[in-house]
Image 1: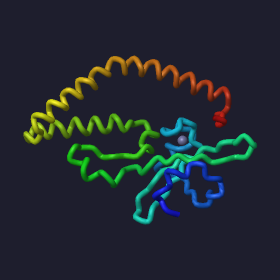
Image 2: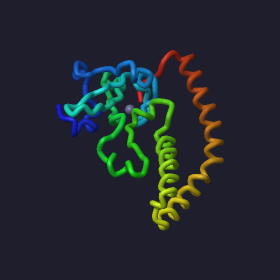
Image 3: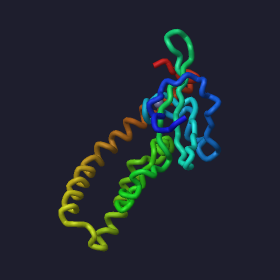
Image 4: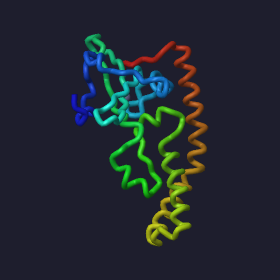
Length: 180
Ligand SMILES: [Zn+2]
């Protein structure tokens, strides 16, 4: 089994089950029942795979009933918890690249990246290590971000209500319907 094409093999039949390894205590709160960050279906099983080099990848499994009634497994590749590739060139910006599995928890990669960048920019300014032309572009970007604060506060209220209603409907309906 090679890993290079893994993200492509999305509709693998359940025959590969023997290779699957469930997530241990560290990740068990993340998997089943959570919404998949890629396809938005509920996750039925979160697989954890280790490559020969020790890198750990996560794959969300969705059990889907086909038109002929047979059960298929749809797999979504969520990436590693922390990326190795690209890390070296992003580290000087204070950005540590994480995979989608992080989004299954309660923190957001957006928030992590922005907070780390803020700390890093402060540090760069203290050391006069930021070219003025870059600083100007960054200020423009931050102004744009700041414009999102009020709309996002409103969004939080609306979305929280929606999530509450969905949770209530799921509790009453006793499970989810995976027939997309
Ligand atoms: Zn998915």
